Length: 226
Length: 226
DNA sequence: GTCGGCCAGTTTGTCGACAATCCTGACGAC
DNA sequence: GTCGTCAGGATTGTCGACAAACTGGCCGAC
Image: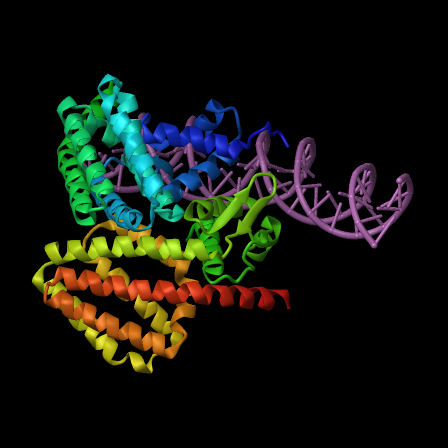
């Protein structure tokens, strides 16, 4: 078996996913299997297997007889995913306030308060990672691994847009403030307040994202046309 | 291309998924690619592609060098999925009460009240289908296709257990009553009551399922051992 | 000038082959 | 009796090949 320490289809899967998450390929464009295979120095078989996994992940679409296509960047898909994310995070938040141990919860709050304090010195890329980690770690406190998996999948699918959303400094400042009040509600174990804060936090992002995606769309297309 | 009217990998995907959903194969057992290929009269390539999709769906697990395995039936996975389902359905319920048109909503309520009326004459298999459709159609009224996709995936993964849960006639009677009060809260557009009813409905199922899965586990194993 | 059909090149769909790895069970040492 | 070892067979991982379908552009009819 021509296999090094790590599996070939996994390599293909990760490399492709990274490209698709970042929209390094033009949305809606066809993915040429042979080309990708040559790029990654492997045959088409593992590429196709990886693409099939990505199809189930919602990262590529598949048309029988025509092949695989980069997912399109659609406004409704993005806002739908934001809403689903809200559902899951609210569920996680309510649960963690009931089940998380006091110590665990305090640790979480302290860690992220410290993070907030020095976030002004962070680069944009790190800010997005930090924001995503904050939300994921919060959800992790609820102790439901399935919910985490779905959230991770959603994050992959909206990461590109999240980055755009946080590009504006004032939006990021707001987001940080919202995180701070969320942390406050969490230590106070005030479920109602926490859920409300989180809902507003995500609702605000969704609204802005809806507007921003449109301009991002045109930007991508003109970039790729060049 | 040796392809009839319909795509081969899709055929494999659907056939395999149906078997896995129903646990027609022993949980945790290895899936022999050649055997499946012979069964479905195709080569291993499309089988592997279908299996990769099912991996992303959470229907099979994959161990490099060892192959694909039927998902295990784990109590925590099932209860986690029930909780995620609750998150999503609550989100859908809250949304649909805000966005669904009066006429659409009345149509939905009427249809399912009629269904409830004649549910006593239904067979178990139909009851499960009907229950699942009720919840899916409700979620569909919220008009978020991504949420629907995730819900469908969850339903596939818990359908087997749902069937077991509804096997007891008294549980099914309860479930129907809960559907009835949910419908009532929906026509009244009483979000709080509706969410509470739905939460109790699913919480009750989850509790019972937790107990039932254990016995189901032993049943499956002894069946398959024979 | 426009529409439709045809043809060559490209890309996908599926297969069988072969090498690498894993599993089974038998055998022997202790 | 138990444990480690080691063939032999079974199974996966990857590849290249070839047939079927699709794509885009050319040409002629109208």
